[in-house]
Image (tube, rainbow, N blue to C red; front, side):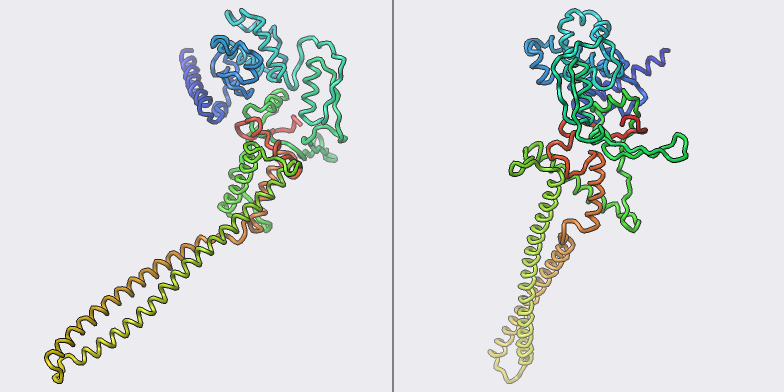
Length: 461
């Protein structure tokens, strides 16, 4: 027993250290390293409380602006803030521990020990705040408390997608009469599962997802709570080792795939930056789709490529002009060397000639030495030009290696890009031409982190 307690304490210390790093440095979700440990069962443990807040997309150690507005007394006392955070995180922990059953105020109060239960009114305000904004008692769960009196006013919800359905259920839970209007002949919105029983087979059917089937960013995602409520087991999506083949069935070179994937990710990042940071989501009053943005980004990349090609060939021409100047100078220098050599030969023939006077012989000797000096200087200048020509040729060779492509993407690259776009459309459950630039990426809009997941069995949809 002592060994088990020691082992449990060691695990908690490791997780507590990892949890601190997660909160401070926003590192990866530490749950994935301890899949076999149910941290939520650690009552009043700071790791369990922090994890519960993080699962709800809340900071475990700091209230949000919305919370500060709802509880103005938190601005006046650090003690009130600490008490609020403990009660809030404790509530969230109890909810995430079993989201299939309604968490009532009475159940929560029964779990609180002294002195945390000394102000029931404050505790109830926290409970009602979290329930009102969908942090607890949301999704598909068994109701325990009596149904409230139905409000006489009716609320109309447009669209029977997953958001509309959950909103209607939540409003009904609050005692409001809600009706959903759907234009299609089916519910589900982007979620669409095709099921066809096989003829003559027993309990066998074909199941195909025609819409959204992935959970995009698992950590803090309310869909993970739905999965737990439906007892759906989810597995992480891993496409790192996914081979891609050309139309002939031949595997495409991994380096080429990585380059196109990098271009795809750059376009996604630029689109997200344009929409969420720069706020550019419309053109002449018309909302931009993600597909339009992709087209514009690709054209922009091609324009930048052609600009680089123009700059490249201008640089190439400049180097060629330098090479021409050097080569022309070398030709002139070579002619000069030939003339100097001819003059040297004439002077050499006169050397030791008996017809010359002593002064003429001395003058000839001096001119001969000068000719040798001029030839040496000319040869050195020629060799210097030759060295410069070699350097320019090396520079030309390097330039030739780095010549930009004639097009940003050739036909094969575009097919690989289409593969990535198809995967993106499969993730979001719609064509990129039919989703808005501003709202397509729910993971970015709501700060969802962690791996993308898919359901192991088709239960949820």
